[in-house]
Length: 348
Ligand code: KG4
Ligand code: ZN
Image 1 (cartoon, rainbow, N blue to C red):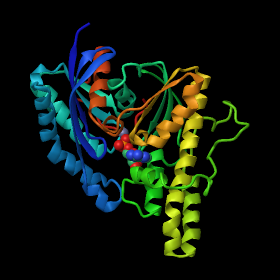
Image 2: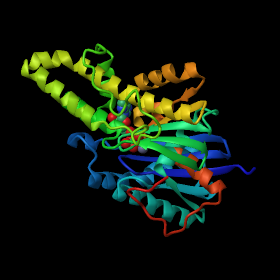
Image 3: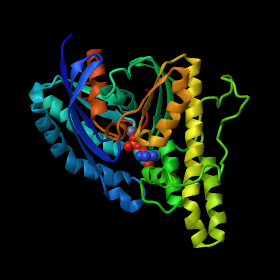
Image 4: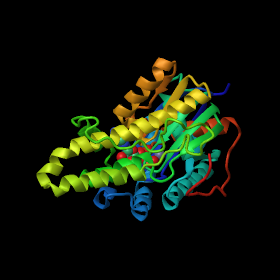
């Protein structure tokens, strides 16, 4: 089997990233990875699409150059240029897609369009040789919450998703309610460590004892009601004064995080059991949450399933996973031409 070398480019949201991977089939190594996070969005408490596109424009060339240099290769040494073309912010995606096209065309190298969420599925495999299909996957990021059964690479069955807010979005919104900086996930996690469990016991959304796979919400999640419940609890504490609210913040963070985690763990457990999967792969920025990973392990490992989570660098948006997913598509002969377009949404 031929060893392939692929450059990945990722510009779907607020990280400009490039990476080089090398290998074949399930034996792929990361040669370089550069991630430049855009700081400007902090000022606005959320990603501003127009600013994201502009920042990608100024960063994409030096970021790619640096990734190639770090891997010690030139563009002509590549077997393909893989670029995220969906889903994401269209303006942001277009920067990577346009640059990827130009680079591939100028160097006479094949172009591959990569799906951002398929990339998240591949991220963990770069670090854990055993994080390969078949497995149950939970992808939890700022924009997505997807529960999938992965029978083989490229063979994905979507079991459940969020009905409203993504898991990361819920973390970020609740962080805002608690006066924490954006993005708030890791701040909630830190604050929750000093909080008391069950002081605020919020309802676990879409988890009922008598649910069966025939129920439409058996695998789905919903976090907007949980967010509203936290808002009401914040208001109640606030009514007792600023000091009361301040004292309550760790307990509110803990109550929220426990409810969200227990919901995700229950849904993932259901999927692993229904398909008899012995591996569970986590991905996306919320997979950085140590309490989530620990809770998954506590629930699934006694039942014979191994839980794989990527390190934070590969859990959040990065081009290593795009290069890895691109290599898989290249091996299948799925290359793109210069008509490759960017899409805000696209099924996997
Ligand atoms: O995958 P990602 O980097 O970007 C998207 O594609 O959205 O995920 C970012 C999300 C943010 O919502 C952030 O608050 C959340 O991941 N996040 C966390 C943690 N670290 C990042 N959520 C909970 N706990 C964390 N430790
Ligand atoms: Zn992502």
